[in-house]
Amino acid sequence: MTESQWQPQARAQARERAATSSCMMVEVTAHFRFTCTGSSDDGRERTITRRSRSPTYVKEILRLQEAGATEEDLHPVVAEAITESYFTE
Image 1 (tube, helix red, strand yellow):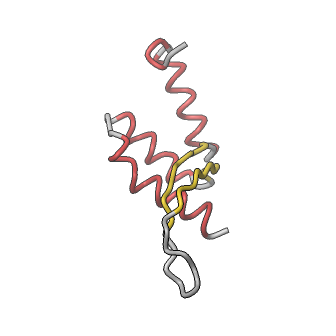
Image 2 (cartoon, helix red, strand yellow):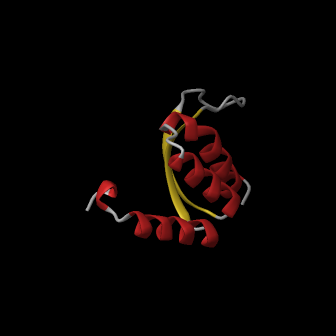
């Protein structure tokens, strides 16, 4: 079943559960570059899959999606969510 086939109420309920439980899996492909001495400065691509732990980011991502945001529009919010859950643990 595709997203366009979901009943609007079922979609709204799923989004509400995600927003209130702060449970959303986010997968991104990131390009890391290292510039410290003795390290190769060749960029490395990594896939990061993390559960967003902050309901603030989950709500913002869902709000932007509902408003018709593009993937590029979501980049700053997803970057903040990944930074919080991946780099600060």
